[in-house]
Image 1 (cartoon, rainbow, N blue to C red):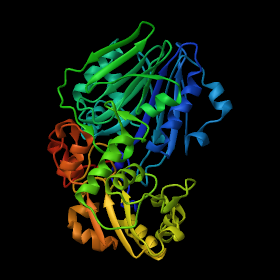
Image 2: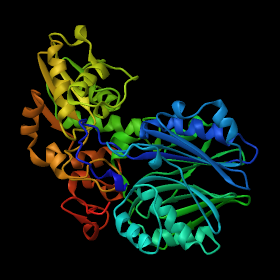
Image 3: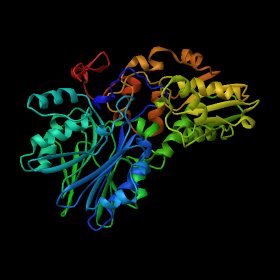
Image 4: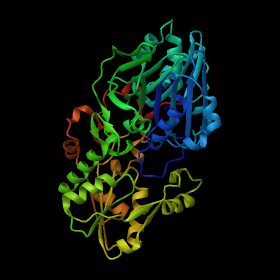
Length: 478
């Protein structure tokens, strides 16, 4: 998103933060607002700063959105007032300084051909260019997010067919996007030509559901039908589901971090279960980086599946070595450094009686900035571990992501500026082992060319050069 460019305040966590989750349902006769509430609740892991739902009743579009988690944003009274046949929902993550209600989604635009509500997961690299073109034609923007650029462009291109306008918009967009949209009588889902962000279709009887992940389909009792194909638009109306392909050509490039971290373990991507893939990452990691130790445990919860795979492949007992407090927010949004550091200790607490006197292997999904990893290693040592061996179930993150992950510059990536041995010293571990790029693709059992792994190898799905400078967006007027 446009507002993903840093304001000078840097996140302190090691997690690669992703933009959001989207959900939609076309269900005449169903309680679509409550179904959407359940759907975005299931996608809460993809965004925790704001939540919103828009509904259409064939006459108009109504919406409610608020800051905070899904149960904080909605209650029974609010949901009871959101009545209609079609609904879309959104949960959002944003960077420090842009967590504002005005930027929450869905976005609702009203124009000459009606109303359009839109929810977006992804990031455009040419958003500023498009925004300036629209501003030159007199358009006034209310937000700082690229999703408004998409909605405004569709409204401008609509000459009577919103479907044609969406396809025309796709010809102008560059970047990643999984979109769910509604008009007063249609539900529309779109995936960018490279399929960088996921989007799935499910059914509940005669009703259709769209969701970022299949776990949200499960949450509402929907049966999985298919993934929206890269570059495909699906339109659901009174005549059923219709598919149209964008003329824009792209090479399938699902973000590999969906398998590594973003997606919930109970979701399926491209027909493969995420938990199973992560176990295979861990098993491959054990083969590549064996070490003598007494126990294996994860950094909860993101390292859980890989740690199980590592333990099974190595024969070293698996246990829980740290407990996660699930009632604390992300550590980096605290107001100052001292409180952030204290929050890490509140969020993760080692089990001293398990770790004392042990040689331990701790498995995590990634190291981005290195700050949290160093604190974790020190906490484990303070709990009495005699050796701490860090194992990472992905390759070193060396390149910035421009498609929706909060790593915009190489300067903030510890592996881009330090060798694995130097990273080991910085985090204070006795040894450090990353999963190799080749091993990662071997574990996922799909050819490398079907994924975007640019954060590891610098090979972006398409040339981003025309829109980038010095690894960040040129936003001097924004």
